Amino acid sequence: MSVRITIAWLSQLWLLGTRVRLMTVCALILMCPIGVQDVVAQTADVQADSNQLAENIQANPGTESVEMSAHCVMANSAESDFPNSLVVHLVDENDGLVAAWYDGATTRYPHGVLGDDIEASELFVIANEAGTQCSQQVVLDDNEVFEDLAPRLVDMDGDGEMDVVTIISHAEKGARIAVFGYAAGDRSQLKLKASTRAIGTPFRWLAPIGMGDFNNDGRMDIAYVDRPHLARILRVVSYTESNELEEIASAPGFTNHRIGEDFISSGVRSCQGRLQLVTADSRWERILLTSVKETTLVTDDAGPFTGVDSIRAALECTD
Ligand SMILES: [Ca+2]
Ligand SMILES: [Ca+2]
Ligand SMILES: [Ca+2]
Image (cartoon, rainbow, N blue to C red; front, side, top):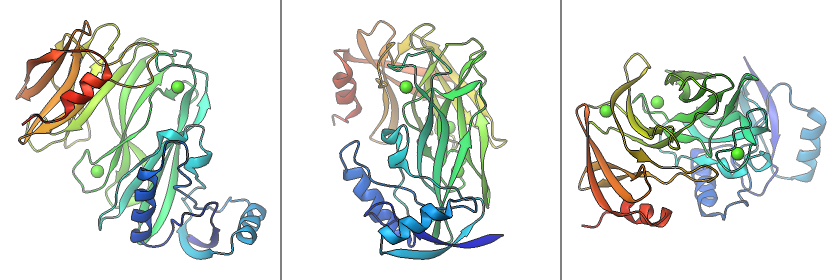
């Protein structure tokens, strides 16, 4: 089922229409200072407020008629409670996810390790579909939040389309990594595709380091620090053929986050074709470079940790 809706634009940035336009918008967004990203999405669904649409059309002489599916929702990252959580993927010829952000601020999970106790309860995405863009929304249950800074767009299952890697925390079970995306060929509903098991205790968190094929077996992996303030265990999970996140390696002695910081001090570097995880050691004294050899983590010392800038410097290849 589809409906024909006239779409009006809330900003000067034009989005709907061709992929070229979207690439232009994404490029603009990437160049925008934080806080002034105008708009990523302006789509409409069958429940859209027709009066509002009419006003928008009158206020914006440039309007378009676009064939939209009924599963699309209104979405505007600039009006989100977390506009800075916007992430975009520069589009190639493929259809699929091109942007994601959090919304729905809530204080129902008062953990506060990321600097405040305001967390997100909603995830929005924009997908390219046959030349149009469609926005979709995930709304968490009341006992969950996205205890995160920004979603991550990565093709985890290797189907050529971006997936969204998030952190969900549960009132009774604490944090887990959750991967959202579309089932092959079906963009009618964004789905939870895979998840780690939750830590098991409320107010226990994890901090992603990054995504990549760290053990070089052709499957994407996620590296994270399990309880960076407490257990300080580096774990690597692999995205399996059956949409599971299966642990392939772990070791204690790592951290990448301090309570109250609204950033994560870690990342993945690729130097001479070799992927390495960059973190601090559990005492915040040294910078560690860690690679995955089959089921073993191999760690090298890369000098003193002197703040997040020293992590940034270690992410650069030196030769
Ligand atoms: Ca927050
Ligand atoms: Ca994918
Ligand atoms: Ca792998």
